[in-house]
Image 1 (cartoon, rainbow, N blue to C red):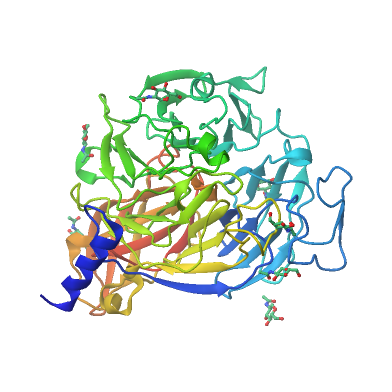
Image 2: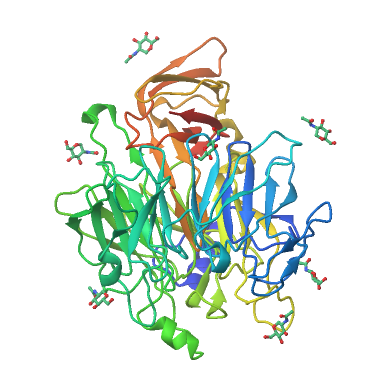
Amino acid sequence: MGTGSISVVILLVLVGGDTALSGGGEWQLLQKSIGIVGMHMQLLQNDRIVIYDRTDFGLSNLSLPNNRCRHNQREMVVTIDCTAHSVEYDVVSNTFRPLFVQTDVWCSSGSVSPNGTLVQTGGFNDGDRAVRTFSPCSPNATCDWIEFPGQLSVRRWYATNQKLPDGGQIVIGGRRQFNYEFYPNNDLLATQHIHSLPFLVQTNDIGAENNLYPFVFLNVDGNLFIFANNKSILFNYAKNVVVKTYPDIPNGDPRCYPSTGSAVMLPLKMLQDNNSYVEAEVLVCGGAPKNSFKYARAGRFFGALNTCGRIKITDPNPKWVMETMPKGRVMSDMIMLPNGNVLIINGAGSGTAGWGYARDPILNPFLYKTDNPIGSRFEVQNPTTIPRMYHSTAILVRDGRVIVAGSNPNKYYNFTNVLFSTDLSVEAFSPSYLEPAFNHLRPRIMSQFQDQLIYGQMLRVQFQVEAMLAQDLVYVTMLAPPFNTHSFSMNQRLLVLEKINVTKVFGASTYEIEVTTPKSPILAPPGFYIIFVVHQQIPSEGIWVQIL
Ligand SMILES: *[C@@H]1O[C@H](CO)[C@@H](O)[C@H](O)[C@H]1NC(C)=O
Ligand SMILES: *[C@@H]1O[C@H](CO)[C@@H](O)[C@H](O)[C@H]1NC(C)=O
Ligand SMILES: *[C@@H]1O[C@H](CO)[C@@H](O)[C@H](O)[C@H]1NC(C)=O
Ligand SMILES: *[C@@H]1O[C@H](CO)[C@@H](O)[C@H](O)[C@H]1NC(C)=O
Ligand SMILES: *[C@@H]1O[C@H](CO)[C@@H](O)[C@H](O)[C@H]1NC(C)=O
Ligand SMILES: *[C@@H]1O[C@H](CO)[C@@H](O)[C@H](O)[C@H]1NC(C)=O
Ligand SMILES: *[C@@H]1O[C@H](CO)[C@@H](O)[C@H](O)[C@H]1NC(C)=O
C-alpha cells in the first residue's frame, strides 16, 4: 500500500463518511482585515466585489474617507458613525476601498440589473423598505451607493430575489411577509403591488420560521421553483398560481433560515441532440433538524443534517433522491464551479443560524461531483484555519478561485471573550483544478466579445491548450455571478452551452469551439455572465460577456 492510499484511509476515518476521498485545494489569506464583516457579496463585471454588512453592529474597523459621517437619529447603536459598513474589493489588485451606505442593509437581498448595476433591496429598521443601487465605475473613480428610500411596498428582511427574463427582479417573502413584489415595479398583475404567497404561510414554523431566505430558481419553463422549510412548489408568478407541488424533502427536516441549509440549480445543459429540451435539477444540502432553533436558544446544539436531496424539477413525476455528505453541515454556501461541480464551503457541524447558536465549525469544504455516479460524488477538501459561521459568504471569481469572507455570530464587532470572534478577513480557496499539475490541460481563451451577445446566436471562442485536445471533453459554460448572503446564492446559474463544433486553427495548440448562446432570456435572464472553456474538467480563466 502506497502512502497515497494510507492518507486516504486516515481521512476516511477522520470524517467518518461513506464516500469521502482525499481532497485537494489550497487556501490563501488575502486580507487580514477589510474593516467590515463580509455578510453580503456580489461580483460585478469590473472584477470587483461589492461587500456590505449592517449598520447596527456599532463602529466598524474602517473609517469613511474625507471626514464623512452618518448622522442618523434612527440608528440603533451609534447615531453618529464615521465608519464604513460596505467596501468595494478589487479581485485583481487585492485592494479595497470604503463605500458609504446610509441606512441599515442588514439581512437584505439583491440582483444585478442587465446593465450591470447592483440593485439591492430592503434590510432592517430605517432601511427595510429602501432600494439601493451601485453602478460599477472605472478603476480610480469613486462611485458609491445611491439610496432610494421607501421604494418597496413592505419591509423586506430575509427576502430572496430572483432576476426575471424581463431583466427586473422579484422580491419574495422576508420576515412576516407572506407575499412578493417586483422591482422595478412594472407590475405584471397591475393594480396592486404586493401579491400573496400562501406557501410562505404553510412553511412558517411557529417560533422558528424555517422559511426565510427561501431557495428560488427560475425554471426553464419560466415558472419559479420555490423551496422553503421542507416543501417546494413550481410557481407562476405572473398569474399568482401554484403550477405544481413537489413532494416534501424526505425525513421532512427544515432546510431554510434559521435551519439554514443551501441549494443550487445544477448546470443547465443545452444539448444539440435533444431538440432544445433542457432538463433542470435542484440540489439542496444540509440544514438543521426540527426544533434545532428552539434547543440552540436553550444552549443545546443538535448535529446538523448530513443529507442532500436532488430533484429533477422538470420531470413530470419528480422525486427526491437523497445522498449523504461526509458530515452534517449548517450555514454552508454552495458554489457552482466553472466545470459544473459544486463546492460546499463554510458553516458549522451543529446548531443553527442566529446569534451564537452554532458550534463545531467545519473547516473543510466538500466538493460535489455533479456527474459522478451516486455514492461517489463527495470529496473532502483541504481545511482553512478560520471558522466561517453565521454571516459568512463565498463567491466564485473569474480566475476560478472562491473568495470567502465574513463570520459574525455576535451582535457587535466583538473580538474578545466570545466563542467565535467577529472576522474581518478575506480568504481565497483555490480548487484543485488550479494546481500547476493541470497547466497543460488548462484552456486559455484568446477571444474577447466587446459587443453584446444576443439569444440563440452562434459564438466562436478561440482558445489555446498545451496538451492534445480531447475534443469530446471540451465544453463552454456560462455563469451568472450570484448575490450571496446567509448561505444562499441568489441568481446563481451555470449553463453548459450547446456545442456545435471544435476545429483546430493555425498554431499547433490553438482551437476554436463553436457554441450557441442560450435560446431565450428564460434560460439566461439578460445581463453579464462569465464564459469559461472547460477541458477535461479543467476550466480556463473566464471572460465577461453581456447578453441582452
Ligand atoms: C478592530 O478594532 C479594534 C479596536 O480598535 C481592535 O481591538 C481590533 O483588533 C480590530 N480588529 C481587526 C480585525 O482589525
Ligand atoms: C442601470 O440600471 C439601473 C437599475 O435598473 C438604473 O438605476 C441605472 O440608471 C441604469 N444605468 C444606466 C447607465 O443606464
Ligand atoms: C489609478 O491610480 C493608480 C495609482 O495612483 C495609477 O497608477 C493608475 O494609472 C490609475 N489608473 C487610471 C486608469 O487612471
Ligand atoms: C414538513 O414540515 C412540517 C412542519 O413545518 C411537518 O408538519 C411535515 O410533517 C414535514 N414533512 C415531512 C415529510 O416530514
Ligand atoms: C431529452 O428530452 C426529453 C424530452 O423531449 C427528456 O425527457 C429527456 O430527459 C432529455 N434528455 C436529456 C439528457 O436532457
Ligand atoms: C463582546 O462580548 C462579550 C461577551 O458577551 C461582552 O462581555 C463584551 O462587552 C462585548 N464587547 C463589545 C465591544 O461589545
Ligand atoms: C466543423 O467546422 C469545420 C471548419 O469550419 C468544417 O469543415 C466541418 O464540416 C464542421 N463540422 C461539423 C460537424 O459541423
